[in-house]
Image 1 (cartoon, rainbow, N blue to C red):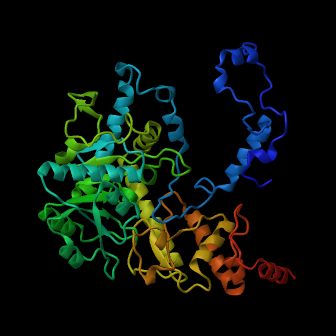
Image 2 (image 1 turned 180 degrees about the horizontal axis):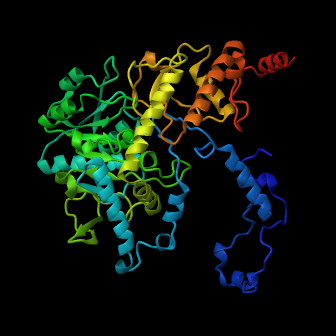
Image 3 (image 1 turned 90 degrees about the vertical axis):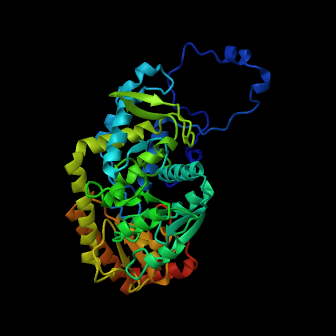
Length: 485
């Protein structure tokens, strides 16, 4: 039965508990409770057996598409597989039963793991200091921007402008606005790279920094990154790295070596921690040494080889989250780094880039690349030559077990008409050649179907739990009946 509600299965006087508690006396308990807090009517919870409850949630779990179910080429989102060994290691008893308020001398093992992760992230990104507090990628952005703001406050400079490319993630201007900055958008040129002339005109003493994703959301590496860094730094501004696409650089080049001063990492995108589902995330923020005093407190650091928690931070931006961040998510990130090692992380990056270029090459005749050059970890392909609307096209892929790729308008701050039907496809390093060939085959199958039965595409998906709203259902059913005959 397809239903979201437990109440549908509810039956009066049914319970999942079959074992009575001999120490529980309901009448005595009721007498001991103040009358003003007692309910005068049942709370109205659904009544089910244990097996009813288990079957309900098991069936619901089958409705969701995740990377464990099939290909998830959602461009810009980097839907990496989460190795199950990391789940196991992060829930070892020593970690699972730790509490941040227990005696400090019993937490040194946990702090050691955090310190090691900070050092690993610093090495991967070229940053001198790292905080693990931020609870997600956008929270990491906010942390980095608060650090930036505090830096200029300490210098006595009133800089209110943040520059953001039109190919940036939508969280960039949102985070900047939350911190109190005014955003100015910098356009891209005909090659999909940042327009240096426009940037030169925008950079002045009112600019605090530039938020840049490299590679960009268009799947292209900013070839002029050293010039961009020089332009910002000569004006006294800072360069902020949105780590959303670090999976295309990890182990090969470090943002800190390109000239970036601040960075956040989306651990789910780069370090293979769980993504989505409403659960906790993690967005570690790294900075160069001159910005270290402003990091949120407390800071876990080493002093003469001993790990300690430093809460004496007079110039800090304050706390971004209680205690030390989402520990079990961060532990998964550390496990991913340690089990892969430096060579393994580099290989993951190389395979991510290879897979994206494989998709671009083998779908290029059907969906021409927007930019005629090698892509990085994701490719941007045009759906303008399709027989149907690109939005409808990608929804039909759901019926073949493939999550729709991103339509560029959902991921960028601004997009021109030429991008309106563009698909951003990111297979990640997770997918094998066989999986990529299967994905390519399904894209072609849907394209052929669009030429002979467009209504099947326009009304898709057909096999998903949630269907598209159909304007003329009678006409749709008539078409289906004609096709069946």
